[in-house]
Length: 151
Image (cartoon, rainbow, N blue to C red; front, side, top):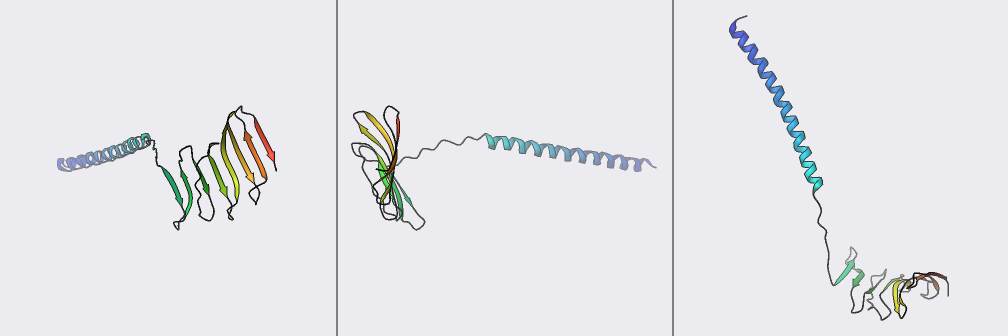
């Protein structure tokens, strides 16, 4: 073995070792980059979004209005109808209401707050197919609940 063969063999081994080290450094750098990038992406905080409007209108895929929500002078009230008709109700002196109507336009569910001399009473009323007799749940201003069946 000549000196020249020894130098070539030495250089080949050294080059092989350096290439292996370089691959290791690339792998470590890639893993560190992925880890730092992951931490950065997970640490981003989504800002709280506030949507403000005078009214909201919900429409179906055909563009038909299905619900409306807005503010009246003394409170809010709206009606959702399956056929797309929307009735806006100003809150009465007694308080805001939410009504759900069936396909025939009959009131079936009432959700509201009544205001009177005693305070505010929260209520849910479930009505029959004629929009009259039904059941309900009421919570009086003092916190006492009542449940009624039929009228």
